[in-house]
Image (tube, rainbow, N blue to C red):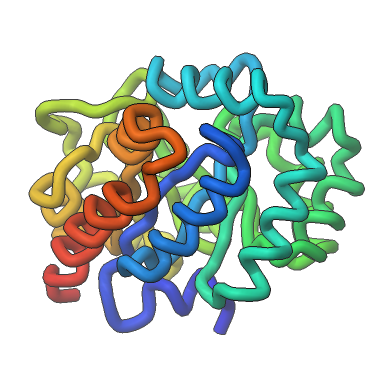
Length: 260
């Protein structure tokens, strides 16, 4: 069984998102290790980009801080190698097509695989244009993780039937960010997914509390939290590992308490 499938095996999965290099790479390393210790089942690592179109102000600001510090993709690959030597949970890159293109798509995916990455999420690559990345991901045994949004509608079944790793269900329209409540009919999206694949699906965008995370895990296979964690890192800076670890533990405990 792949590491990603294993993350969902016998339980609901909690997935935090962390921007690499915010405030610096050594703090990112501390936070990722602390997140795994606190119960994260899979971790999304954001490679900063100057124009992250799917991101709200919190993650945009984190990207800006990381880029201002001179963080490079090669440094992030080295970070992943260090993490992989200490962690067995799946690690997934979330970034944008331009980051991959400018590095060289094949070189990027080969280096990602060698570093120990399990999958790739590219929010700005629509399902219809995924093939050029998909072929290379297959070559280097990486899962190209698809996203399903409320606007996907009649494409959901098709996207689900070709999904790999896990399906990222976007809970609401717009960019990432914390929301007081999530009103999208996620249940019907999950139902359609489950009619077309046995790949697990996790819900992200807008989740910022243990209660919301548990509610999303009730109707899917897991919950993804990004902006609330990244916001806390922005507040605490180099001292973020402790407070973030406690927050992640509360989120992971809430998700794991949901019965499958």
